[in-house]
Image (cartoon, rainbow, N blue to C red; front, side):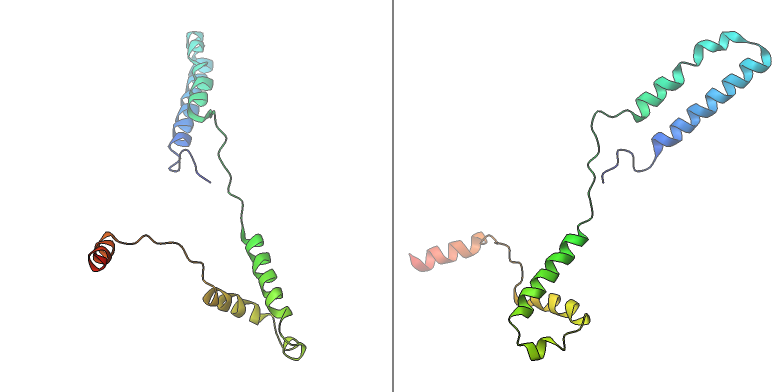
Length: 127
């Protein structure tokens, strides 16, 4: 999940505003100085500017359950072709080993572009 303020600077600013508001209220009540009341509406405005969002952060849910079920399904498909006498002796530990073996046998390949130097060499060899 991406966070708007990973260093929590907004939280520190909010705590400063809360301290200011508490000090202001204490000075107002102890000294009976009600002219300080005009500064109290700034606290909600400051909190609005610090924490209001127009977008909802995107939450990334864990995918480990799906990946585990996919590897179990691949293992079940692989084991369905194994003779029954061998299938009896397969333990839970082989689940990890066979999934890694399956990745080695059938790796996920990505297309890679051909470097320009190789293209020029082929053109000169053909021409």
